[in-house]
Length: 638
Image (cartoon, rainbow, N blue to C red; front, side):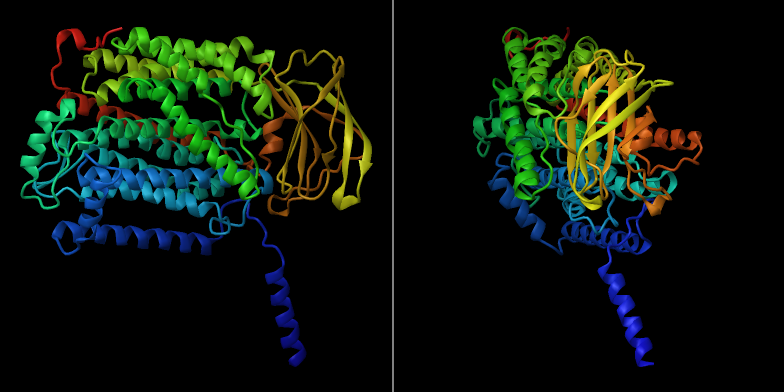
């Protein structure tokens, strides 16, 4: 019996010491229960807190709102100042977690579950913080209605539209976490940032900046209010009268409002730029023309809005804030934590394009958006092309010169129009509804068409790669080698975007463009990893061709995959790189089911975008700018 007990204890100890197998179809149920229980508990606590505030039983929120009014939210009522501060801190926290998490998945592959990945905690905290900020904005106003744009909750409870939209964006982003697990259980692991549920996390967080802008505008028109509701109406009315020049007592100096709005605009630029993260790390799973499209779209939307909403220098300040935060996250995740470094698009040339165009077109905002987008898609594209040669692991090449610029122009003009209408809506000067809706629909359709164009790919038939290893070093568990690669037929690849070796998920990342020796012949310049958990392959991107050749793949019992070794010399077919990069995906799921689930996510995303558009339109309609002399009024037609 003692021997049996000893053996049992030894078995348990060995199991605890052994690394836990990484699931390939969703997290372990115990982790799901713990995570769901924690989320439910936090939500209940938040609701109780809000109820206590509204019934007067809890006064902490009132005191915190008062502190926020006197701090960074000076000039705003507490129901706008406190949520804005909470949301901004939460967004930066979520951004750090997202880039940390992306880095971990690129270098280490799947994790053991949502609670086993440290990077998930700042993401969850940040996203819940965004949702909390929206709930605070909804719960804080007591007494009179917080401005004419407020939404009625009950007979005597009105919530600012920006708060409702902020809570909705936060909830949408949070919903991506449980749905992501459901997605993996149905379809397997889709190790790409552009998985539908991953885009929910990113899109909800990034677009929450628009809700924050709406909330800021509502709060500024309402003005700072006393903590008790008795004098709130008088204060709001007085502030509303004098708000145009910001000269009422308690209003912030012009520079403080400039900084606050510039930070929000920079935050919007950061949020829209997260969609590019696969390119930032050097492991894009989509065509290279998508990168200039995404850069131009983010620049057009955020920087045009910044210039019109913030004022002169607003676009440049938004880029400065972007570089401080986004660059700081790269430094923290890379050198500080010791994970992978993500490159940072500059956006400086794009900001200069917007500022220069505004010297002539500031009073014609729609025209400014279109012209700025055109400049971003041409001059900005050229600047980012040059920057990619220095800063990006997969620099831009002549393969994307024409199509990439066309995509950048499409993204820049669409983003510029959206940015102009966002700024005009926040300023209460949207064009007439028919024109606004037509421009918004055209911008969305243009982006959709450009994205769809980038998704059209081809995989060459009857193409092979012969690989000969040279300079093999190390034992089996440390094996590296150089390689000489011959593609057949030799003329299949002409002027590629890349022919590169990528090795990932082996506790590191290896990205190396191959050196062309002759027609269809390439060689490595650095030894590539061929051991352990590394997944190493040749990647070929030429025009619409997006293909790969597996070199070494480890065994993966969770998905029933055997090891694919790399002998001294071998010939393998060129195949779809998605099957190599995402080999954890299940192959027996009907295609219609994936399309149906993706359509549901797309519909929810469009609902969020349209809701934010409705919020901007509502704000413009019920909170127009005080009348200005005719000579000073911006012209809102193109």
